[in-house]
View 1 (cartoon, rainbow, N blue to C red):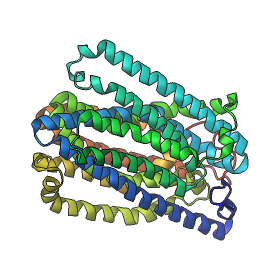
View 2 (cartoon, rainbow, N blue to C red):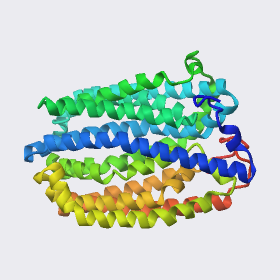
View 3 (cartoon, one colour):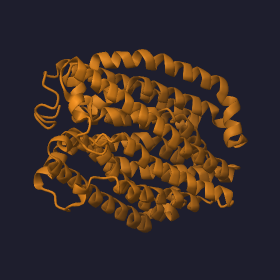
View 4 (tube, helix red, strand yellow):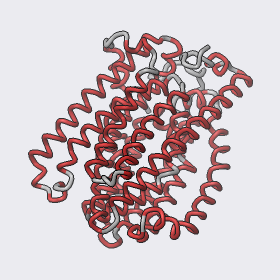
Amino acid sequence: MAAGSPQGGEAAAGRGGPDGDAGLASRAARDALMVFVGRVVFVALWYVALVLVYKGLGEDDAGLANAGLFAVSIACVKIISGCLIEPVDIALMRRGPGLLRSDPPAAFRLFRAAFWMRLAAVLTACAVLVVGVAAYGSRFPGAAGLTPLVPFIAATVLGEMLFRSVLVVLQGQERFRAFVLIEGVLQLARFAAILVLWAGDAMDLRHVIAGYALAPYVAALAGAAALPRGIFASAATDRDAFAELLHFLKWMIPAMVLATFNERLDVLLVYGVAGAAAAGLYGAMITLALAPDLLAGSLGSILQPRIVELQAKGHYGATLRRYLWVALPACAVLLAGAVLLAGAVIPRLLGPTYAQGVPVFLWLLAGTLFWLAVTPLPMALVAIQAPRRVAFVTLGQSAIVLSGGLLLLPAFGAIGMAQTIFGMRVVIALVLLALAHRLDRTAPAQPAGGGGPFAGPAR
């Protein structure tokens, strides 16, 4: 079958027995490599653009404050997107891939239900943000610098929703070539916008945010052409599709709200406690330190549609052991190299203003590499199979970030925040590892795809 067909290649991979299992593993490895290599190439362009942004905005202390406002603006976008967009993506991965193979019209109704649900939520959140800041922003001194950027933040969130609505269909179809190409359009658009600003000596904060906001609209338009025509045949959905999504989201949304705030709470805490310049320094360092998360995200994109089948066939434990055997020593080597080179590389890359951020970078990188070495498989399994437990895990994560940040930030500044994030990542990674091990040991045996992803109560 053609590569764009939802059924293409599924029959061979779905057969039982050693040949079918080997085919599934081989195809998963090939797709993971494709997604990872594509993301490395395209997201590397955005990292280059971010370096230009932080270098262009942060040439002195006043520039570091502008860099801090940029970091906080992006954090706000990611918080709203993570609360309202990403939980629906995960919910769709429980049912969507199977329906696309067995009942495409039902799958299209499910994806349309998710789209209307997200659109309503995002428009409501953006309206509340714009009106709330206009009415009450003057009461919070720290919000003064952000107030002019709020319309750009709202526009970016809406663009991210449209982009993710396209991308999740391609992920559900396991059309990873198109998935990577559309992500590439996003990163190329952002890179081009920043390059034009840099070349024109127009690296102004508002210009940068405007370029960032425009890119997801360009990518969403390009991606819409790759979607199956049936998904546009009607705007209709049905009550069952909404009910299935809400059944899962009642636990996943609280968990993702907490997780998203955890991921960005550090930037907001640094901004609130230590000021915009410290936030600019911290934002630049965390941008560099989170580069390995690119691989974790690529693995997650591949594993989410397949983790249920991997567990059902009894292969989760062996796959995890093989992954840890490779990932732990590889990440240790990467950290050792960073310790040796960061002091020389970061000032040359971003400018001498950022040399004081090297210890911040190393603490953050250590946490990122440990997370990458331990969590991709456990996180996918727990998120799909036990959303209620994810809510409690992320509540603990919030407590660590908030208490540790408030305790260490006043005394140690950005370094204290970085140490808090390192400790949080280690603790939560080990908790997820233990939870996934328990889920795998206690799961009842069932045929791959049997019973439906919503069969039985959520754990």
